[in-house]
Image (cartoon, rainbow over all chains, first blue to last red):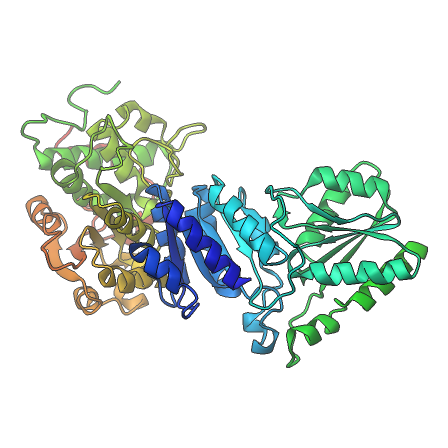
Length: 307
Length: 282
């Protein structure tokens, strides 16, 4: 996904001279093309994320379209107040891109995990939150994000994620992407959980419980039109994310459902539990630990439909 | 409307900077008293820096506050907002009677500036350590867009406790931001104590020099020295400029000077009158 991001932002920067790329001392060689094509619009801001966000805000206030890129915990937790005050309070068009989100860097330990950042950032007024599913969605999302008039945070994986879409899907901020029809349950997947959601839907189908699947690349603002529809149409709606069940897509949908008038469907949230992951493991094992596998998801959904 | 004698601004042709400073100071005392707001000592401390900048240095047009080519001035120590508001009113960015409603319900002028709250306010400040990184971004934008405006950021000495200040200090010289100046209002106090006892600030001039800036020290109440120091940008060596302005908290009103109680105290009516006499405005 990060290669797709690098390619797309390089292409966009060649068309739009306002785009400036700021990175926090990562992405060795990843942006060589960008640097070659736009040498005066690439800045390695060092391991100094708070300053990077402030600089980006200053650039945006001066008419430029800055894009900040570094590892997710450092571009979010580390500089939360700069995002809140410099970027969101002034509502300037800064695009923040967190790479290696969720459990992508499971093996590096919890300093490098990001299972809480959408929960923090969802609280910031006016901030759009995107979590594309694969490199096709990354390309579409980056294009939409740089056209957007306000601040955007986008979380992406690392590299080598399965490509789900055959081509770039039509992409509108705030709109989910329908992936598969179904009758009994509906799986709302955000970020790189999409292939897991589709595999879970396959299992459910084999077990006689058909499941619809949507990719939900916009976590804020929520696609309320979709939620109204699926909570009326299905017996069960499940949210899937590589993020805590608190505060992310599942948290947002739960909040929406609390205010909804007589929603029919019950809600199941799949995500990480309210704990730090202390086990030494790779991403797949971390997903297994948190019950984020097709088999575990299908089993809980099936139970949920009958209990 | 204020009377002519109470007006901050004077003749455009030959501004009497010291008279302007005295009038700004009295405005701050009045605003603090009327609104019941703290931070008067902090605001009085930086008045001369603002007067020197706005009346002699900044290339700005109050009629065109959004001119992309204007110089930018950021009061990063947002708690001293009265000093910025009175200065901007004095320069004609907005009517001086806006100051009378300072901090009142629906006033554009809050205790600390919000985004685009009034013409001439470049940044919402109040949380310390934000002005220099954002100002650095503005200075970098000028380089990218090949514009020749300059950026001035006024910080407090207490603000230099914030790590983000030093992140920006490391960044700016690498990118040869010789269009960026920081002025430190070094009054030797922060909210609850002596700034050099709370954190090891000294020597500020050596620190900024070591970070790759041109650094100099001035008497922060000497309008001529401040003007000369701020004129020192763009020497051709590619370095940003740090001006360590030695100041006195509560400057200009004897019973407030160097008394940190005035970080939070609000002047009573008789103290406003006493200040007026001391400033020669009674």
